[in-house]
Every structure is written in structure tokens, then in C-alpha cells.
Image (cartoon, rainbow, N blue to C red; front, side, top):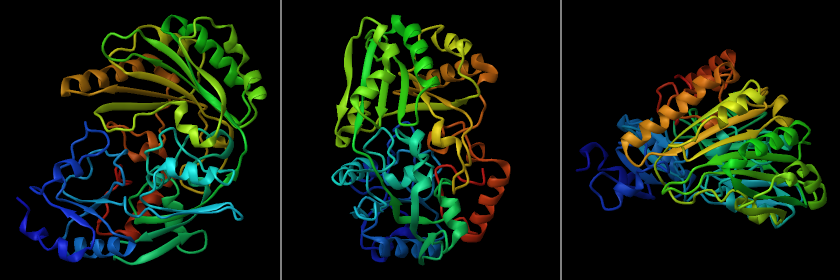
Length: 439
């Protein structure tokens, strides 16, 4: 049954409102990761930015917080007791090819921006999944395929359009509300509701990449070649190495995914150490149109239950590789090392600062049952313990997992600064981020 205090919500907004007990509510309130429970009080799909403002004013009057999840990829369970705002109808997307900029609505997904930019010979700063909302990804910094050359997605925001905690529409940029702009550029969505943003695009004409897969018996050779290639890689080259174990008894595999902003000839020369490894099972590296970027990893496009954990390496040496290859990864689905470095090591406009660590470890497993999820988490914890001081404990905001807090993504002084921005812009705590800055 819908609670009486929210029955008037349909009169306050023009978008779709679903309350507990309504047909469609059970599906609408679930996040992308189905292992995360979300006991929300209502789901609102706003019609436009003015509708978002109307919702904020209503929620303030009702004394109910708002959690924003365009797609729910980053959900952590923090939305319990809140009104869940979906922004899928805020889908405006315009590209100004001459200025090399784009205005992106809060509901636009990464694949749409990739295609729109590519039509003009331009790129944005995407992750590997085309279904992730660009705004949510950018609020967490956004570290994807082209981060070694261009840094985080948040580094290239020109302006955020927001609704503040009073229900007023405002802009945040380097001149107007600069404190809010700084916080939103990688500090998460805890300060205001972003309804659109303007970002810089970059001209790129060639993409070479794909994924090549070997049997897991070749893992030692593949990881050794990966270390050699990444040790001398130019910033245009992003390479990720993975061990994978799919359910149902399929043989374990090792794979290398590549995205290179350059010619096929140069890309093949950079990847030459992999040529000596026999036994390729499938896949290839080839010239790709930018519209096909998502085919490099073919990330899942449908929700599912999982448990993930990410860590940054203080070093990625032979001892670390030995630990990662010492035993089967089961019950993990995948274990991946991503090469960072390049432009990520430089200063940036938001709170994150330089990423000194040059390699990231990402682990994920299915959580079809609570026991299965617990087993995955235990395996992740075991690997981290075995890696010891090779792991720094510092995090990237777009890779936070269930055991993490936002404070571990930024220096202590920046964490304090973000708490000050939260107090200034949302003193009543009307907005609830996936990973609140106060925790």
C-alpha cells in the first residue's frame, strides 16, 4: 500500500509516479545491480528539469530525501527510505562540432554520446559500457578507455545545470557557483541534482582495438607481455588484462582488451610482445569505427546480481602477478588489471587530484544467492589480503564497492571541503548519493 503522505505526489509532478503496490513499481525501483536492495518510498521519472525542481520542493515539504539514479549502475543501498528519481526522459543531446562541445541531458547514456560525437569525428571520455548514464559516470570522475590521454571525464565538464535543495534551477561552472562546480566534478551527486551538463569533446580520427582471448594456461605469458607493453605504452594506448571463469564449467580464459587512439600499424607494433603467445581461442585487434567502441569488451547490457571490488596497486611487479595467478579465480567471474597512468597522473579541476597509482585491480562475481555473493566477497578479500602492501587502499569513485566509503577516494582536506559544500548547498540532507560524502 502507498503511504498516505505521498499520495499527492502525482499532483506535484508531471512525470510518471510509481508507489509501492502500483503495477510496475517492483521493476522500476530496482538498480542495475540486482544484488543491491532498495526499499524506496516512490519512483518518479521526471518529465524535464522543471519537473525535477517541482519534485525537490514537494519532497522538502514532505520531509523525504531524494536519491537520483538514471540507470542505477552505481547503486549502493543508500536510497532506502527515499524517493527514487529516474532521469531517463532528460535525454537532450546536442553536439556543437565547431566548438567541440556537447550538451548532455541527465538521462543520456554513454553509447548515445559516443555515436553522436563520432558523426563529427569527435570523442567524449567513455567507460566500457554503453548503457551507463554519462552524468552519473562523470559525477564520480569517470575513468575509461581514453583516460590515459585525456584524464577523467569530469576534467572536461564546462558547466553543470542543476536543481538545488530549495528547488531552484542554477548553473555551476568555473565562474558561477565555483564551489559547487568543484564538488560535482568528480565528488559525486551529493550536493545538487544535475539535469544537464556541457562538456568538451576532442577530435580523434582513428581507433584500433578489440579483445583477444587465450586459454588460462597462457596466463603467465599474457601477464608478462602485458607488463612489458604497458611499461612503455604511450598515453594513446589503453590495455586491460583479465582472467575469466564463466559459470557452467566453461574453461578458464585470459584476455587482453585494447583501445588505441592511432593507426592499425602503430597499434600492432605496440602490441608485438603478444604475437609470440600461441593458442589464441578467439578475438582480434583491428581498426574500428568509434561507434563500435563498446564491442571491445561487450559489457552486459541487462541488469544482474553481482559483487564487485576494486583496488589500486602501489606496484605491479612479478610478485603481484604471481599472487594473481596462483590459483583459480572461482567463484569470481572475472579478475582484471587496468593500466592507468598518463594524463591521470596530472592535476585536475575536481576534488580527486592526481592518480599516482598506475594499475587498477577490478574483481567481480555473480551473486545469484546471498551465499554466492558472500563467497565472492570472501574471495575478493582473500586476494587483497594476499596482495598485502601492493594494494594502497585508495579508491576511484566510479569503482566503489559495498565495503567502501567516499572518503577513501580523496585526500582528507578535500573530503573536509566536500563536507563543507554539502553543508552549504544541502544543509537538510535532502539529497542522498550512492556514496555520501559524509561517510
